[in-house]
Length: 453
Image (cartoon, rainbow, N blue to C red; front, side, top):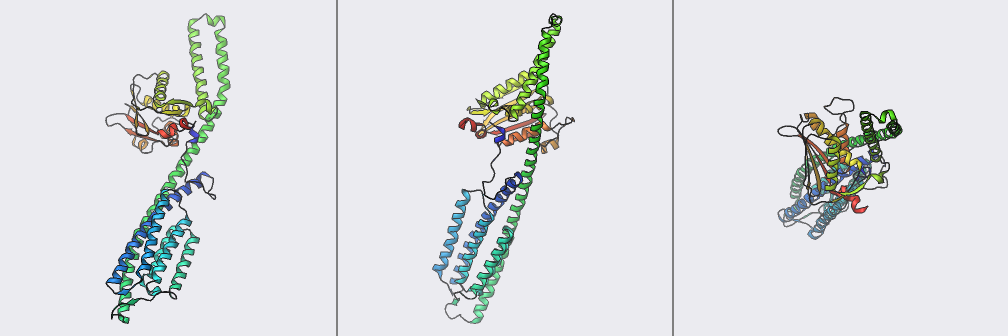
């Protein structure tokens, strides 16, 4: 699995979409807010449908006003069909732009205009509902589309003063005072309806906008952290290149010393030389791992394996290198699954093991299990546990209890690499004593290259 290719997808491709990281995150958050706001428009349209049905029934039956029921029913059917189509589209897309919101509001204005034209035109008290459409447009839309919506509603209002079907009261109650009384009651109903809808939907829209701003802040923080990791990776890669030559030189010198008669005859010196050779080989292996993890010779660093085999081998390697006093290792992952691993993933888990060993030299516990489509690795220790600020801000750089320069980067790298794979890292203190770090990996991300490689 190539870590550098594991970033989560953005909100889709657009012709005018900026190619910068900050631009992509901004548009992703904006699209999410627009989708929620479109769902609010759908809800408002359902309210409009119910309200129109109730109003038509009351006006026609109770107030004895003659209305063209088939034509008005067809407008209501149009709104229902528009809502159904909108909901279907929202299931198959993640992008909702300003133009779509503008068109949806225009269709609502058109439906309202037809209903008003069939029921008295500009003299209908519900004509003030145009203002509701304009206010919602001012909250949701860009400037140009808000002004366009205002011009359209103004034109519709003017048109209704010329083209409309006059209201006709059935029976003997067609006097002017009855019409005035009807108009007054309609204005009151319209005011209550518009005010209630405004309070409800504007507060919901503001909540969506606040959620968008929070998401934007999180995405920008994530982008900054990933930029920090790139710089660290470049530094590590450069250092690995620079260290390669002196390590090779030292290895040659040690081999030459072994052939010197005065040294070869001393068993204690030979033992020391063997130990130096072992440590040099380990340093060269670490340098090679850094180069592989930073993207060089990537094809040599990836390995096809299974989850159980990968974790078993990883734990065995860590046990041999670190020699912990007691490692309580349980692998309950079942059924097994094919994955592609590389040194970066191995190093991530090594870092968590190393932190647990440093906090608790006497005992480290590792539990591996499967929960649905996820791999869960839980690492426990019996150390002093995490301070409250570390648990609250797990994975933030330079937050550590070790007090050394550069401390806190290990867990920071762990969190970001796991996040690249679509997983999570959770840190907590055990109820009695010690700390617990839980790594969660989606198996789909780990096995993707195994299936398509």
